[in-house]
Each structure stands twice: as structure tokens, then as C-alpha cells.
Length: 255
Image 1 (cartoon, rainbow, N blue to C red):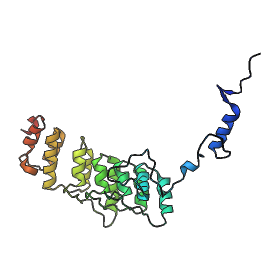
Image 2: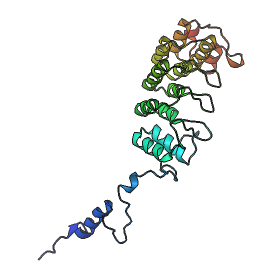
Image 3: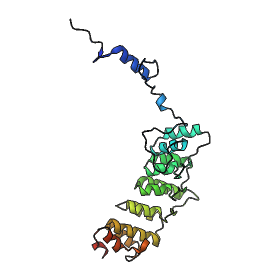
Image 4: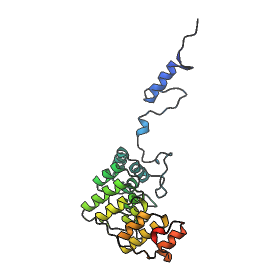
């Protein structure tokens, strides 16, 4: 007479049942350490974010601010709300990370987390706050080519008294310059221009030089249509022709 099967494979049904119950924290299983599922959802402000996450280089790796910024960059609205609630006033939506000065809004913007961006703006997150490099949230989004996020931030900035869309980073670059250099199709740069984003002579020089270096004919043609000088000089006396040649790009479009 064949033996009666008592479980799946060689695993007894009784032990399998205990293991399943332990997942809900109902009973302990000798020799098996399993954390209840609900315990893994709690937020502990005294510990770092999950070790598996890779924080940006400009965000400190430990502390409540790191947890908040990580939650923002991951689109975790419940996590942000929980961390802020447990911070008891020590944390705000504008709490910046040590070192780089990244705020939750900046982190969410550069990752294109639109729901996080809206959640933070609704709670009064600063639109013109700058990090250690002078970058605002909209600049972070523009550098990453996050078109929808840039549009959301700019629209909110225009509607917010005192907020400005013409700020520049420490290198003198505006969000429009970042968008033009990051976006091959230039749709975002053109949209920013329509919204009244100023395009000064220094901007056209930077975009022209970048377009020549990258070999981007659309970028060069667009900035020429905006009044750029084909013979302009950038940093170090570099001209568009020099940059195109040094980058091994075709110069035909510049001649």
C-alpha cells in the first residue's frame, strides 16, 4: 500500500500551515524567523531607508530627511505623510538633505513623480528653493527631461504670488537652458519660451555651443531662429564651429 502524502513534496502540511499563520503574526514557528507582514510596513524614523535603495549622491544616507526624500522620489504618498506626522514638527515638506540641499520636491521632480510633486505643492512646498548648486525643482526636472513635471511646476509657479520662473543656478543656467540641452526634440524648451521664460543672449550662446557639441541640428536651427549669433563665443573662446569640430560632428549645418 503506497504511503499517504502529507504535504507538498517533502514539506508537511502542518508546518506549511504554521508558516502561513506566522506571516500574519498569529503564531510563532520554531526554527523559522519570519517577520509579520504588517511589521514590515511600519516607518521607523530612527533607522535609515531600506538598505537596498540607492540614494542620490547629494542626499545623506541616513536620517528622517533621507527617508522623506526617498519616499518623495519613489512616489510614496503614504510614506511621506507618515514620516511627516511622526516628525512632530521637526520635519516639513521643505526639509533639505544634508550636503546637497535636496528637498523632497526636488527629488520628486527629477524622478518625474508627478503625484508626489502635486502632493507636496498642495502642502506648500517651496517652488524657488535652491540646492547647493543653485538648482530649483523645475531645473532638476528639466535636466532629466521630465516634461510633464516641468509643465506642472511652471504652471504652479506662474499662479503663485512671489514665485519666479526666471531664476538661474550658480552657473547662470535657467530651466530653459537645461530643457533645451536635455531634450532632443526641444518641445519642452519651446513650451517654456511660450510661457514667457526669458531667453537672454547668454542663454542662446550656451544652447548654440551645446547644440554644436552634440551635433544637434534642430537645436542649432531653433536657437538661430531665436536670434543666436553663429559666430558667438562661449567659455574659453569656443565657437560653435570649434565645438562641432572638436566633437567630431558634421559642420555642414553651421556653414
